[in-house]
Image 1: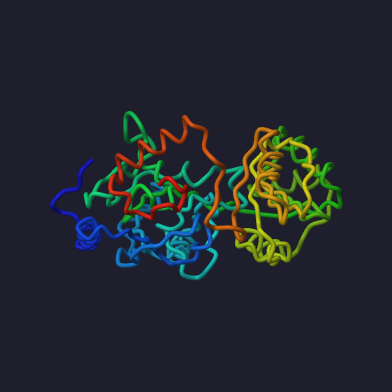
Image 2 (image 1 turned 90 degrees about the vertical axis):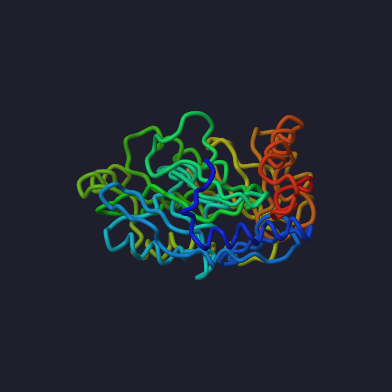
Length: 358
């Protein structure tokens, strides 16, 4: 819905900047904390810094909802939630101290807990944006069921700022689990995938999984009795520094991610066997998300992944001017183009960040 006269000075400032860009026919490069500038295709334009929109608008711990302006630091929000023993259940990666909540939503990335708790878009209740015509718009609200029809707010998750400049977001939060314990198993990749899929069908309090090429780690989260029972059932060695381990996986700080080789994010059905591709693998999300370090030809990687029904994203490194995300089918391309026409008809917001066409 259109914004009202009560819109904040920050929102009006962003809207004025967009209208000026329209008048000058100048593309805009939208930037928050600049911690995820490596992600997506390279784009040029005048910098529009969203950190002007900062601060918590509303936090209702008993309602499990927090609303904040887009430029608010992720670390600030996590600290506030931590004081009430609450968290963002999708465990968003920051990739740097300057990460903002607007950048978290725009990138659409979720961390180790995603396969078991849900993705960012599942917790996104509402957004306020400035579209490519300088209009301030609000979608959704602060409750789970707040709209009839198409949920436009979740459309902004992962749009990389190409449909609108996010100025405010409302997110559902959850209580932190009372107990967490990480277990380790010495397995090969095929056996790790097999066990993860078998465990997924059992009443186990799984909250994260990672196979690093030598060992499978799983995190259990829940009540004291529930976690203790699961440990006895799985019977494995525990990992004492588990907190640091999952933080390093989430922020891509483990040894695996230090390579200078192109890093691919491969999405597959969890039970898919290991693919015949050269390179090193790290497996997350019960087998559904797999990271590949490889210098192999991008078209070959995508072809092999596509044959399994999956898709591949060139997450970091490689050619940032080419196809970074999975090429769209003609039907999906038309849908994306129509959305861009509706939200950013002048093609000024992060043009080319997702795909060449828009």
